[in-house]
Length: 441
Image (cartoon, rainbow, N blue to C red; front, side, top):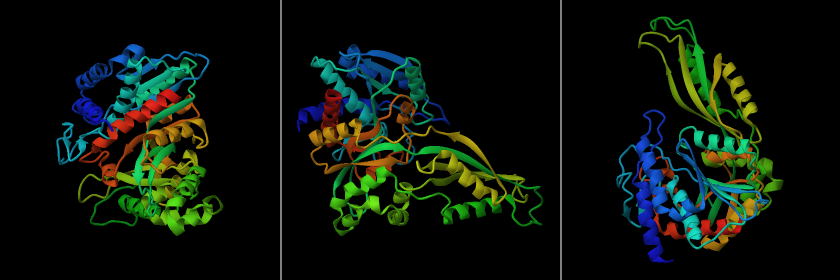
């Protein structure tokens, strides 16, 4: 690995981290910082700016690198540049880009300015070398992925209006992990082939109220408590191993000893494995069923008054086999048992599942093999979190969610938490990964 390249990349990347591009729905964002960041992009990557037609959608950018052959369907590479707030006590200041302990520290080092840097650095180098793509390549970077995804929504809708289809889409998503499943003794590139749709629900219990000195049975807060306990202790949603999860387990199998002999035949053992995985913890459970987390609650006017109305919010992540509508129906029927009303407050687009035998997935496998030699294999999985890629399902049947970064469990936990950091050794391989992808699409 070239230390000169790594040092140069780190210096440029630190400049990106040092601009606070927090996207905050409660406290707002600083438009001047976002404008400064966009100006920085053109300072850091002047060659790709000159090579592309740049379109600005209220701060989210779409860049078109025109290909030599208009008859080939275009592809899209995307990574957002907004970040979540950086509260809490940090080891190093969250917008310092500090290089310490072999890591670059700061909000956005993992989610997702690292992917944006590697993508544009690779493109800029290729443009400076005179490379011209065979097919048109689009780059997209949104300023509001962490809030409501308006930028990706707007850009994908505009492309749809122009009659533009995309052959492949590559966004952030899974990372390179060591032992992603207990017992899988290897290093795996976890490649997202879909994401669960998200539904936010408000559950409301009502009563006639009254004085707290003479409480009746099943007051609103009690009914909400019973409802949440019911959902927490019962299997409300169906469990099923999706084909992508079966394939993930099959690819883990050679690295899992005796257990691997069972997983080699995961396709023939979907029912028993479907019963087993939820017992291995919340991460494994989320791979095989719709989940709901109760996240906020409120109600009541005074300590001595029974509330006329109380509510709790639930964040539901819908499995593909259950689907969004059936998941809503299941949780609504559960709520009705306790006299609770259900309201949908927000919902995301349902994403299709990309074929792990398709060209987009195979291209990622090729790029990983060529540029990340420490990876044992690529494994498909279904993301439980959301990404902007869901909007581009309108235009494309192959949407891949992956970033070529080797991270630890601790670093995974730092995403949207404190002490977010990226190992400096990731910088050169990540750029090389994107160089491969851009020259082989």
